[in-house]
Image 1 (cartoon, rainbow over the protein chains, first blue to last red):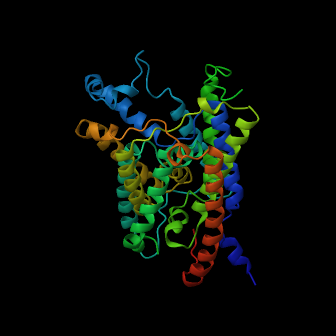
Image 2: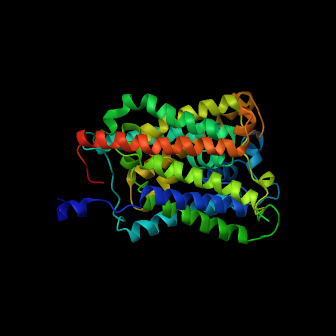
Image 3: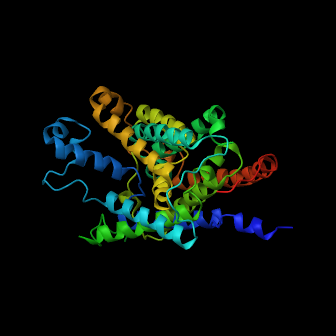
Length: 179
Length: 200
């Protein structure tokens, strides 16, 4: 028998298959409207280029990765689809958190077996690896693995399989962080 | 008919309004599915929570099948849909690095945005790390510029590599997804007996 306290503890999430159908329809909608998929990492890349360009336009001009991202007409790289969709993503999360009662003060979520410090350290390291990886991979989980594969891209499928495959291979070594 | 923006059917500033709306839906669905919690996400690697796999694969097959139907009905011109180009070498490295980042950090960029939105400090630290990672990549780019563009296969599709049509590829992905849904459901049931449930 499920007691009331247990019910209260259970987080109120969408059924994952229903959530997946909604996400798939969103992806289909963005393909239909924009002809390309979802992206999350692009905004950070553009932010870095914008800051660098502000400090030293000569440097961004000399860097072959950055100079492609600075518009020729002198406008800011931040006036981009990627930036607006990332702003939307943040507010979508915020509203969902409000609707389902998950908004809260700044807090750190971690396994009871590790300290908050360990969790933050791991999050930072993970973020750095993900950041470097997302550029070599031509996109992150949303841009390459999900949207890439959905548009039948071979590279997208490759990133998808490598990302999850590597995750499973190395998960054992990092199990203390989670279980 | 579609895609609308590349064909100029929707123009100008509407781009950004639509980007906001699409992004909003994306963030709402990620958060509502439980991706604002790194422990939900990491569960996919330890067998106690396969929500990532369920949402991800369901979204993937809905979008793939949807694109094929849109094409069949003549609603979208697939030639105008962006196919992510394939650069074998750098994408191999990128996929592996992201695998490490996923297990260690417990987020991917999109999910960390929603984690930040509901007040997770670990989400903020993840995205700061992500920022640093992209900065390291960008400033070091001259060192591996050749590697980055090596193995250029262009906008090649899965079907072109395997010699199959998009329809057969999609059918294959759907079958793999269904088997994965069933298999992970069995695994999750077993693992949850041995791992104490925790509060998120």
